[in-house]
Length: 387
Image 1 (tube, helix red, strand yellow):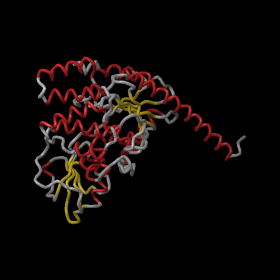
Image 2 (cartoon, rainbow, N blue to C red; image 1 turned 60 degrees about the vertical axis):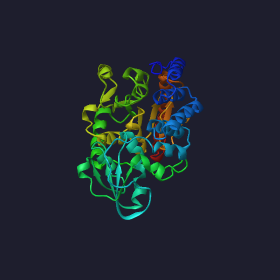
Image 3 (cartoon, rainbow, N blue to C red; image 1 turned 180 degrees about the horizontal axis):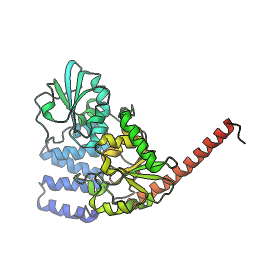
Image 4 (cartoon, helix red, strand yellow; image 1 turned 180 degrees about the vertical axis):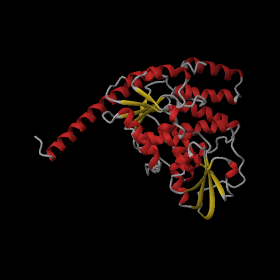
């Protein structure tokens, strides 16, 4: 409770008192590690995780916590090794795990085992898998299948286990970075690697043109993630918190938020400068098609951030502190997505400062857009001999 309230000194004292009563508790020591991560005390957090593993080398929560901490520090080789040992509660597999070997006559099944954003992030490895295997079959949710099936190398997408064909081996999508020995210098960067069909893209562009005109830059907004996510209370915002962003009259705003949290619905309806498209979004295919017609996406740490980044669209991501491992430490850019810019809380819970930074950056974008428009106008006049 103290940790959720950002009262980290009291949280630490409480957990130390609990461990004094029961020093062998793995749960208490895992909670202690999480508090140390919040306090930016990596050495103490690592010590806590290793103490758990010294008593139970198969404790998947300790492996996952240690792995994500190492990955956030850029220690990829060790981080992937720990990350691989996390618990997996999905379908029981009858075929062996793929180790990266060539399978010139074999079919490989790639399995989704995490959230939508993780699937989009790790789907970049599919062409590399296809280069080593005769056929790639992808198991993924229906909401993502239309998009991921367009990635080169995907022969077939299955959204339920009954449709999965016989295969030689399998790999979790999230295991591919380890299999391909990923570090910060060799992250696959062939972006965009997700595209939308021409028909939906044209439909949504016409829809946006009719609703917004073409005079102002278009900005897509997502302010809340899946409420079932374990870290959602930290990563999500209330709609009213992004009001300073919406105050910019030089931008046309489009809500990509789905679902809209019940607590935000009245505020969104009252916002006259935001078009809400939630009711029209049937899948991530629609979301991607809309993103294709936008100039910028501003989002919290959700799947939309990964989708926009995978499409090569400019995307600004508001991240909580400490950030999820994939956003690393103290960076405003991402080696995973070249068009992504990170706006961080300067300290745990300090959303106002991060949002102020976005507002300042938007004002800069408006000035740059105005200068570019004036330059285009001047060039056009010169080309036509207009003084």
